[in-house]
Image (cartoon, rainbow, N blue to C red; front, side, top):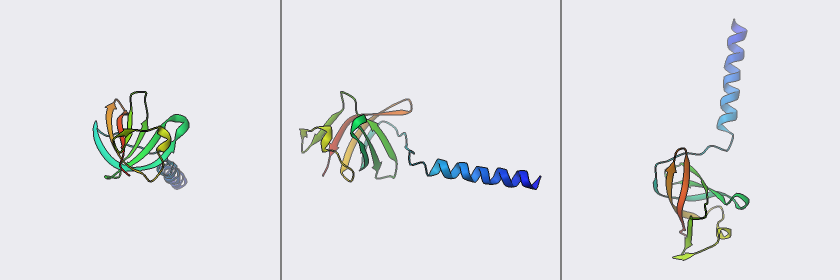
Length: 106
């Protein structure tokens, strides 16, 4: 019995460790506007990960209607890079966040 509890305990720790260190943890927030910093850019998927000021990580796949601007002017996705501060307006659709607009702040 002790061995079974011991195995179960360590398996639970291992699973939790893999889950929490997976790096793919993102949050689904309510529709609205958020300010944060780009953590990762995936050009081939037109996707960015933004960590908000509240510490939430948003996974955002750009659509053909996503507006991307800097200094009030439309810009290409290629201007985005990790470390940039952005303001994002998102719409929650089920468990997905659709970016309506992304404004590069710096």
